[in-house]
Image (cartoon, rainbow, N blue to C red):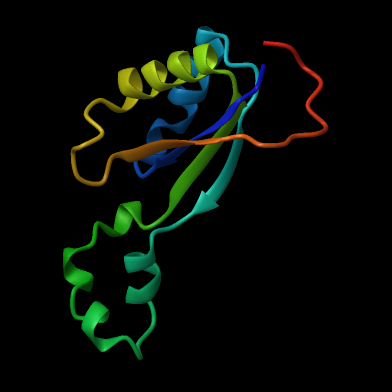
Length: 115
């Protein structure tokens, strides 16, 4: 039974295809991918934010965009997906790699596939 939503914010977007392939190999039956970007990168593009703009040179411009992947899943499926993320991305504590978290799912409708 679906009981959570697993989110992965992937900063290394060049790994997206490999990660999705790994999800499929692990039996993850569906995920949604959306474009995203972090607050610091968004603020750095606004000239009126002088404090943040002064740090532009420190941002990795090649990773100003991210991909946020979310999966509505059960606990066993979440464990498989988390393992896949770790295999593809490596150490999530490394700067500018990815973050991962889950939230309890209180309600869903419109999901018809089985795990």
